[in-house]
Image 1 (cartoon, rainbow, N blue to C red):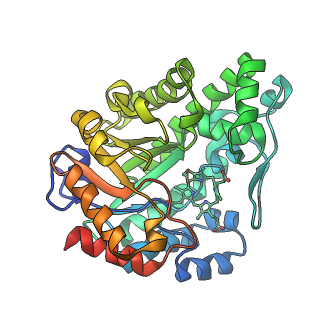
Image 2: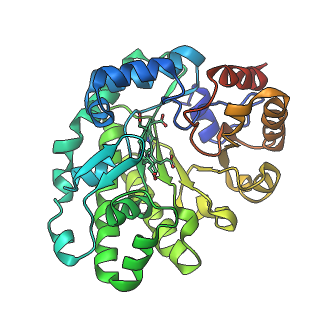
Length: 343
Ligand code: 1CP
């Protein structure tokens, strides 16, 4: 059966006068209703692991704005936790994890087959959300890409330059490679389970792909994405995959062809005009309005929104930001942007 939902049609290659739209981090702290549910949960991880509450925050931006896609509310760092890492969030600072820097640390991790014990509430969230969605809205599952997830597992926190992960890659390649392989295998199982629970599209977030240079990009951004996508395609041939190798720059060219991704998500460091010529020639692209416009608004936001739509008008396009919406965004700017897209 041919896809009828706008987002699925774009991912299948259809060119649409009005592109489908959703936003990275569309459920989040810029929304008062999110803050209220988060307060009810008490802390962020409890919110992620309580299916009724996670389903509620997944649906909030759909109710408020009518986006074409609803992204599962969860976090990329739940996979490390499911593999046995300790994970906690420090208010005002961000995530903290136990670190993996030695063979012994790696040997203490749990097996891939054990991840569902921790992650089963996430699948339940998808099962709750699916029947609640308006029929035209597509349910999006996601996971972090192996390199990005590894940067957090190695450093135990977010890092500006992914220094500790690069150091392990140089200093203990066997442990580094084993960790990438473990995360790759876990990600296949996690995303397959999300699809079985109702996700209609899955997205792979490689937020730190930009710090991989040359052969490292091929080996640790491109190759794991290709391995994950080819296994997902073998198991779920109908489910499209969006890949987001953030800050990949020139490496965006050919990324979809090399990995088998149905769509490449673009950050806002590349121009839409360049990406239309170099990346969209291979298929659907997603992006790429600078998230700062959701804070500043005004005629510049409208002009930029229209410019991006024009630039991508001759090929399949999913409108989105170039990265997640920030907590200081004005919810009314999101409405104004949607009006500029949909008229
Ligand atoms: O205080 C809060 O409520 C926590 C803020 C928050 C939220 C709303 C975190 C902590 N995670 C999330 C949800 C989240 N994370 C989603 C939900 C769906 C959505 O609405 O988009 C998704 C897709 C993610 C993905 C994620 N988590 C990424 C990849 C995308 C990106 O932004 O680059 C990364 C790198 C993370 C790690 C993470 N989780 C949370 C924070 C603050 C961070 C970044 C830590 C850092 O590097 O400093």
